[in-house]
Amino acid sequence: MKYIVLALLFVASFAYADNSLTPTNVFDGVKETVPGENPFNLRQGGETIALATVIPGLPYTDAGTTSGYVDNYNEVCPYTATGGRDVVYKFTPTVNMQITIDLCDSYYDTKVYVYRNAHTPGSPWACNDDACSGPNYPYAYLSYLECVQVYAGDTYYIVVDGYSSVDYGSYVLKVTPCVPCETPCPTGGIAEGEPTCYPGYQDPFNGGCNSTPNVFSTVQCPSNPVVYCGESGNWLDYYYYRDTDWYEIVIPGPDPKFVTATVEAEFGVLMFLIAAGPEPTPCTGYSILTNATANKCVPLSLSWNFNPGKYWIWVGPSSFYAGIPCSGPMNRYTLEIDGYCDVTATENSSWGNVKTLFR
Ligand SMILES: [Ca+2]
Ligand SMILES: [Ca+2]
Ligand SMILES: [Ca+2]
Ligand SMILES: [Ca+2]
Image: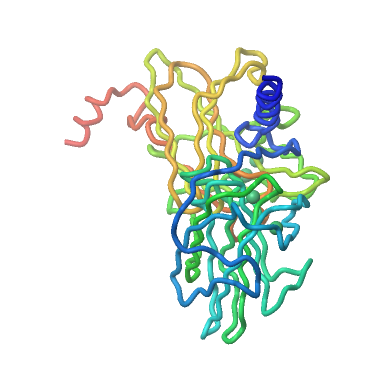
């Protein structure tokens, strides 16, 4: 009984410490560590580089487990925890190309890295710990490497690993030819206008309740829907940070408004709809209405029937360390807000009057 109570306390403390699904811009240093267990009975990576499973061609998908395997390798990407159990694949391209390595359908906190031709500890060819979440694991701690350059005739060893010694289980590995993810600004899109982030950046532009003083991007209404073209990023400044963008909307009343916000990003993205707290300090006592994450180049929509009042649409990286560069490419997003801006020609025209005007 004592052990059960201790186990519950342990789980609760980790759940409390995790802040990936809070609107904060700085990582608290503690990650969720919930190992996934959902065994597959398909093919499987090999135990070591010498025993690596051959990837005969692309696209390639395989599912397996690191349960029952041992810890042979590790790389810092950038987390330094050790002990993750690992399995290995190998791929020998016949032409120079770029490949994408995707573990986003896996069931535990994965890590992935690539060695070129030989085990080169400390110098992987490519490396990622946290870049995406997925249908089988809700935290943005899954691994993804986009457009890794590989050369004809070389052999690339792909190591499927875990964040730490307790992070192992079922994975889904996809290796595909690179298709770059891009979200260019559409015609009529409004530039977010935020300065480019950098280590030590304080976000005096639209960091919302994370900034001192609090500061927001007020949503303008040239049209409905209105589209904003934003940029984001991660940086390391002793702690891991992410750029958070808070877009403010105000529902004047008396009627509620049904608003849909759709974000599509060149990185794993997180969006919140947040109700401001009472004036004059709306950052005190705000409440999160809903939130969701999406992988790069996958549209994410959240809708809400907003009662009169002040609200924030929060857009940012789903991970504090996804390695999103502060300056492009790979750091852009589009945010479409539909149903907020009135389409009436003048303030006093009802929709019926407008329709008459255009008949
Ligand atoms: Ca390992
Ligand atoms: Ca990870
Ligand atoms: Ca931004
Ligand atoms: Ca910002």
